Amino acid sequence: MVTPIEVALVLVLLALLVGAYRIVKAVKPFVWNAVLGLIVFVLADLLFGLSVAISPLTLLVVAIAGVPGALLVILLSYLEVAFVAGLFVL
Image (tube, rainbow, N blue to C red; front, top):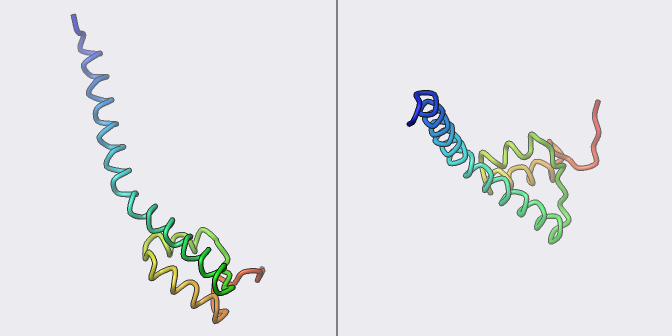
């Protein structure tokens, strides 16, 4: 016989699984954007010698904006406005 505690545990587990699915579904496009942005950074470094400092802020910009964001970060790094590799400022 199934007890009320077992039913409650199954319902809690089901709610957790649905919540985890929705979180993964919401985060998935940002992960893809970040991966594509990192590929753009690597290609820019290999093909054109344009290096970009990879930081959490850089990844955030690329995750939100995608490839256009990666191109903007590369442009800002090239102009030495922001995201400059090898520049250390306290």
